[in-house]
Length: 129
Image 1 (spheres, rainbow, N blue to C red):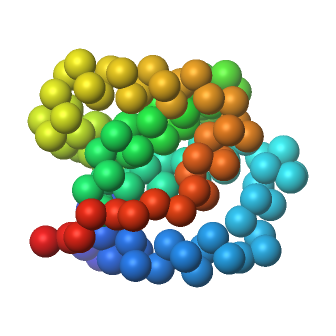
Image 2: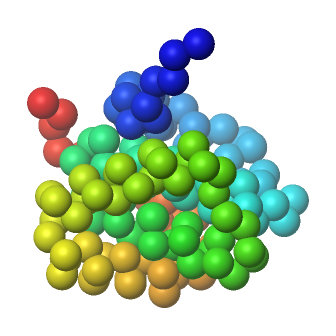
């Protein structure tokens, strides 16, 4: 089986994000106290934001997910880490170090509840090429 990078999959999901937002189970992980799953979902939204050209939003969500993972002691799997490192490298190239660090710090400062609310906010994504 060939591994397809997650970034390609998330690019395809950009147009389907509203379906997930309408799901009654969208905050079930939070309600069940599954904070590791919440961190993973925040990362998924960060990938989607990055794939749709919302770099600052992506960086904030990655920052929030990182802070939550550190708080609960839940590291990424090696596959998650590889995809994450590539996405962060792309953000660094596109945003520059200072802008990335600023957005990242803003994301890290969010509570889990604030991060979920931010992830679910409606945005006007720039058109994809």
